[in-house]
Length: 53
Image (cartoon, rainbow, N blue to C red; front, side, top):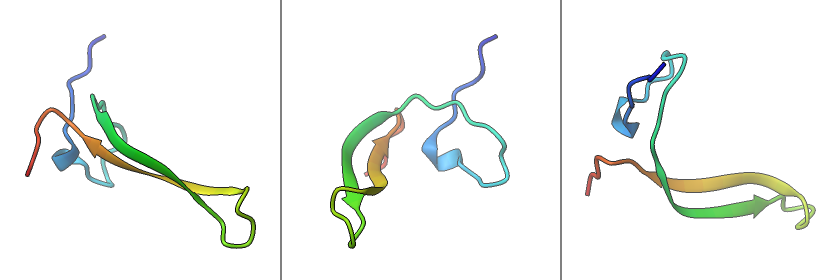
């Protein structure tokens, strides 16, 4: 079963599932301010095949 591809511009919180084909342009880890060895979250800059400049 081949699902259609979605684009980042089509993301909506009420849509239950998406099928992305993305590139991770930049990714970095953010630590807590209390413990630098503990990962708090990861931030990413994503790009799909429809590039908006």
